[in-house]
Amino acid sequence: MFFGAIAAIGGLIVFALYDTEVATARFEAIQAFATHNFGWLFVATANVMLVTSAFLAISRIGHVRLGGADAKPTYSATSWFAMLFSAGMGIGLLFYGVAEPIMHFSNPPISSFSDPGATLPQGLARNAQHAMGLTYLHWGLHAWSIYAIIGLGLAYIAYNRKLPLNLGTFLRAAFPRIPTLVVDLVDIMAITATVCGVAASLGFGASQINAGLTLLFGAPEGGMVRAIIIVVVTALATLSVAMGLDAGIKRLSELNMGLALLLALFVFVVGPTVYLLDSFIQNLGYYFQRFIYLSTWTESYTDEDWQSSWTMFYYAWWVSWSPFVGIFIARISYGRTVREFISGVLIVPSLVTFAWMTIFGDTALHIELFGAGGLSEAVNASMPDALFAFLGNFPLSGIVSGLAVVIVTTFFVTSADSGALVTAMIASGGHHEAGFVPRVTWAISIGALAGALLYGGGLQALKTAAIVTGLPFAVVLLFMCFGLIKMLLARVPAQDEAAREEALAAE
Image (cartoon, rainbow, N blue to C red; front, side):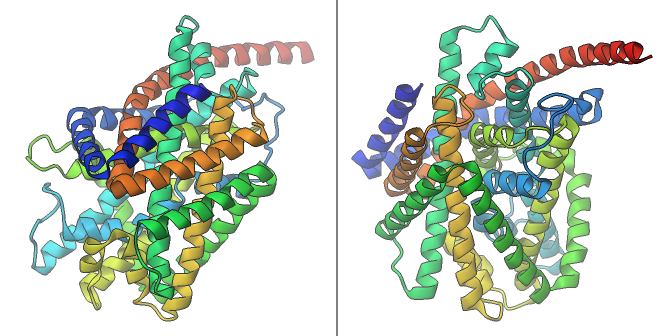
């Protein structure tokens, strides 16, 4: 597994660096092929994950406890949520919190709910509302359901079956006749998808940190500065992952969640507070009213290619992140019931994400609709600059922008160290405590890939890496869905029978 994954990642680095112009063209062609021909698969996979999560939460399977009936959670609810949220979203919320709603508002897709080219107030209002609906779709229940299914399946085999914490082991437990070669290939795909998915996030983070440093200190924007940023952050991530889960990753996750909350509260209080409260309620209503349409929309009746850059990319990104986030969440979820796990991984993070996107996205839309404007031009010119152009509309913008750079950096480090820990766990055969050398090796590998892809093809290369590695893994997730339901349904009757025998014995 180790050498197979290293060969795949090394090949990708060489390809990105050998001829950057050819690499860029190839990345664009690969992304177009994958999204055009397999977009339906990503949409179907995300919906199957969500329906399965809902079934597990409301059925009698929900009372099954990870680790057995007497298991107690290892981490408090606060620490557990901070770690899973930092690993699951992190940097993306800061990169896209302002940029995505503004992009959908200024460049709306052709659909029955948007008004491309609108100039009248009612058309602009319609586009603003649809922009938030699309943002909720991309960052809400579907994304977290992908993490919930893979995390729950891995936690179940690790704590209830006492098996190694990796995907190959899960598939072998669910489908005993599966060939060993297939199991090994799945684990290699999991490592490659994890490294590429995290590398994509690191590339976004490096671009945003560069934009912040340019604003604050006049640092030049470009590949060299971003490479230096990746080197520094990779070094911090290596230090964090070397310290281990409790001493490094847990404390850093709690720190960046606290800082992010501080930034969100500042925007909420100083910004249009009542407007944001109104918008949150209305956004939720819009999202759920049009939920089925948005969840199954594939642009089949238009000649647009909007979905390939947005919905398909997001679903592929979440799928490519799912081995990393799923294993990490499984690692920290001992003692939770299935129902508690689904609620904590699916419902609560989605609501917090909706609140975050409302605070930043709707405040940005308020500036466009009723304030000074100018954000559409800034965001379309440079997405990494979006957050800082937005914060420029607030008092103490220099201090707040500096805080934003710190938050991006801490999320950056948390994503890299969590990804390195999980990758080392997979490569070591699913051991819960991967060794020092593997953790450090994978932290460096993730940073190297992020730097190579950012140099070789910019953000386009990073998006393509996420989509291409996510595509085959979507099929694996569908098999995991079936296998998880199969194992849990087989366990529940046995638990009920044991409980009845215990009650009769007590009488």
